[in-house]
Length: 536
Image (tube, rainbow, N blue to C red; front, side, top):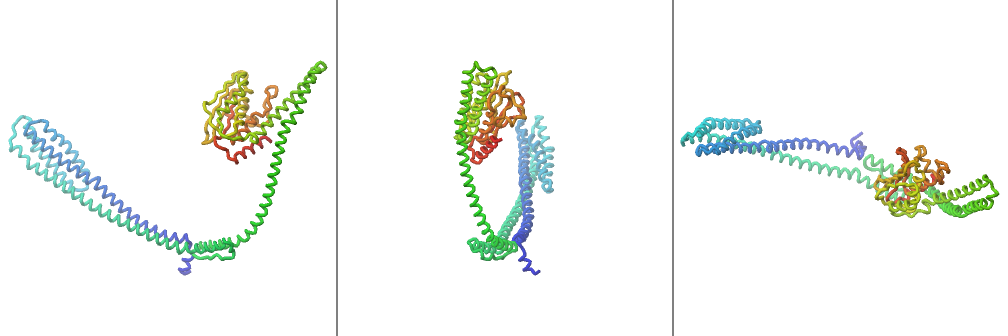
């Protein structure tokens, strides 16, 4: 395999890897050099800022401290004022600290340390041979001659010369550090310029490679694909460029041949879809007919079916009234059974009608203030609340919910009425209503009472239509109240359940409602779930 063939077998990815590998090598080399130069610059800057400059400052303060000592001694010897010795005494304490500080900063420079030790020895000798003896004599009230006062001048002049030498050494060290720092910064800047230049050249090389290896073959592929897209399915797809682009061209050409076959298949599917659309239209017509029949059933149930029941109840009562003397106790009991059955049948029909109308007739959705709906429900139940002596504990402010006002009133009325019906005979009834926000637009409500309660095993059964846990003799009703609540809540996109964890006597029923507008999909799902629950 020759070199030309080997290069042609490279893919675009491999071409880029080769260029990127070369760039990475160059970057790593420059990166190492730049890191070294940056570290060198940082070290020099730190040495200048953290060591040499502070040492010069401390040396200058040391010089000032020595001058303060000399001035304080001379003033005391001339005047005898004890307060003038304070700079001398304070300077001795500061001098030792400054010696230690300068020595710590220049510990790596023997020449400067030598100057510092000479200053320390000279200042100690000046104090020992001149300052301390004369201060002692002056404190003893002995006169000090001019010759004695001038005797210490040569020693202190030597101290001045040594401090100047120290300052010159520190200045020279600082200048040397600055020169090295400038050289390092200059070299570092040139390295950065070289890196940027290398990156620009590499970018240009990548652009040329991209043009020759990718853009040009892709342009040819794009033009050929456009010909095919415009309907010329016989136009060939050229295969040029790197290996992977040639493979893409071959795949596109294979796809072109499959498109022709797919067109025929799509036409067949279009015919099938047309048939299915016609079937769906027919089903929609059938659904509208079924809904019309359901409306007719509701009319019949609310009028025609109840009329015979009313006649049965009326004539049974007339029969009992007219032939009461001819009937024995068993006969009168049978008549009462017939009247009671007809009455209960009317109640079942009315409740069933109300249940079927939820989400079908009552669907005037808008923003509803639950406080007003709860107030209305309590007004409707005022007689039952007063007779039972019930206490209703409610929040000060309930949220605003999007829903049907009539259905939400029915929801509160059925829940509170259920608690009143199943109150405990041995304790006053207390009903507590709570609420909390569980999501941005969803609220959870709970109604808790201290009634007779429900066993957890019947947690699902109490929400099934016409399901009863007690006999009709013990508690009246048709068993549709909580089923109605379940359908109302689900029609509003929420859910309702019995809190089986509540064990303090009575029951706690929880349900959720949303404060935003329910989507059509959610309403459809809720209505479907409600219908399935009704059929169950």
